[in-house]
Amino acid sequence: MTSLKIDTPTTVRLGEELDLVKLNDFIKSQLPDFEEIIEVSQFPGGYSNLTYFLKTANRAYVLRRPPVGAKDIKGGHDMAREYKILTAIKSIGYAKIPNPIIFSEDENIMGCPFYIMERVQGIILRAKDAPKLMASVAPNEMRKLSEALCDNLADLHAIDIESTGLINIGKPEGYILRQVEGWHKRYLASQTDEIASMDNLANWLKVNLPTEGKPTLIHNDYKYDNVVLNANNLSEIIAVLDWEMTTVGDPLMDLGTSLSYWAEANDGTFEKTFNLSWVEGNLTRQEFAERYAEKSGRDVSNILYFYVFGLFKNSVVIQQIYSRYKKGLTTDPRFADLIFGVKALSKKGIKSIESGKMM
Image (cartoon, rainbow, N blue to C red; front, side):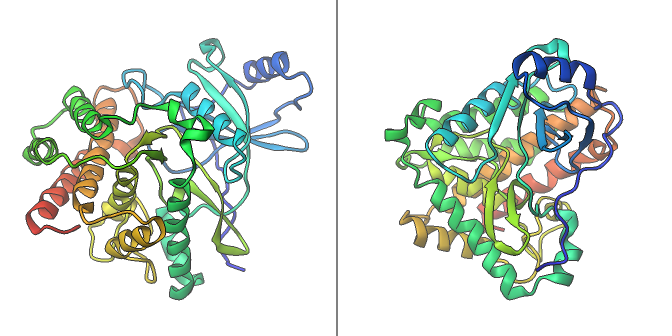
């Protein structure tokens, strides 16, 4: 038993409140037997979609909606798509996801589309939990957990997308090129500062396009704080969360994104805010990649390309958030210094290219 606490919601942040009357009226009109929501709070962390805890007399649920001021970003906060993917994955019997309940695109309720799912209760490890983790979890247990995270990613990529029809949620042909070009366009659309390393990364990714591997289901945001762990056995993953960017394509794009979040002990302070993978006992980035290769049977000899793409994509996401802050579309003080994160990650990408290994 660990001393880490079950993921607990806190007070709703200013400017992100929900209209409980409108929400209850809508749900009652669609699901007459649904109990009235009597309490709303908000889960901490994250810079992307907002996640709320809904409590009724006997049940607990989670509501997901786009962040405030995100209407200028197309595709990144598609609640309808996320709900559809959850429903499709649930229909094939995959158990490690929350059960989707209801979706709404009626903006009269809270000004944006949203959906509700059942709450899966367990431990979610966020970067801020690193001190608690080091105090309560031995390095050998931490290693088992990081291995389980890697193995579960390989399991996700083993889902048969052909027979299940999940292949229809995306267009796998040309996926890598579309991603590189698409994220570069998003960067240019949200750019606020001249950052040479971002331009150089975009050019390098286009010039060095790899041959695409056989497509699989890919999560696209797979890391510690998007999985729910069994409180009595941290190496048991009971649910995977945050499927907003899920699609089908080369699975090494998914692995590269996960590795780009995977901070190590010698990484900078900003990188460590993404993940607590730097805590003693965790696999290194290289060990994670090698274990994935062993479990999946895939060749990861060109993992550097996919890692660099992950760093570039993360930099663009951070740039988009910073751009919203600069435009005054959000006043969240956490966003004020994110431009330094864009510079840090893009510089790491350049160093990785120059050294020929994941830095």
